[in-house]
Length: 194
Image (cartoon, rainbow, N blue to C red):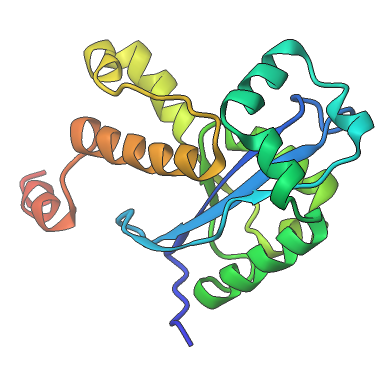
């Protein structure tokens, strides 16, 4: 059994048919677990989620083009799984690395994914801590306070769950390196001089 650590982080990304959980559904979901220093400990498969054709037909042109180009719609047709299966598998992974209710949910604009979790994956929502670490918040601050730094990280915007998670992790590493104070062993001498 893997040792659980309350400092571990849960990274999640979804692709959906649109942005409204009341009117749209989940098409893909994946999770990556990192330690507090953003080293990857584990990843789930990227689950393509079976949805009724009526839900797929609601997609606008952008979503159809994006999810066709990424191959997601073909994956759903060929290897899609039910959402409850994906939810149970994600929970199995989380339980190996994280105790219930202790680790924040991380990602870019993660509150958007969280709205879909609340509506469609209640067991997962119940397991998660209520806090989020949103890389998009740091990006927005960088744009305003350190525009040269913000321009230095180039996103690929693949709109594939696992690829987007790894890009979010790399983006947070980038901001940590360029915007945040050094690690604790370098901070302590500075604090002594205050």
